Image (cartoon, rainbow, N blue to C red; front, side, top):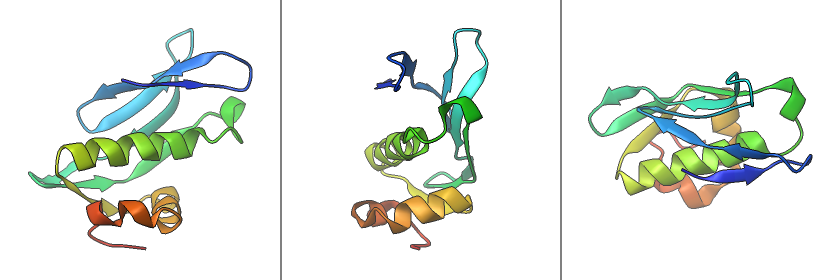
Length: 104
């Protein structure tokens, strides 16, 4: 997937599973995650974004959203936004409105 360098110089590796992009710490604990379960074959619901307190303020949630939006665009899929962070993020990134079925 992709990598994101944190302030401390450590690198988070974005991992991808079906309907999920996430990162783990050195111990294997989830420290960042965005989930987007299927609504139907062409549509997902971006319903959850999580960033561990230890990583707050580093733009990691935004990077997760960028990764999810890019993946959905690549898959030619659309997203319904029910996660409050996703709604806010898409509101500030109109360049991704083409994948939203409920634009902010």
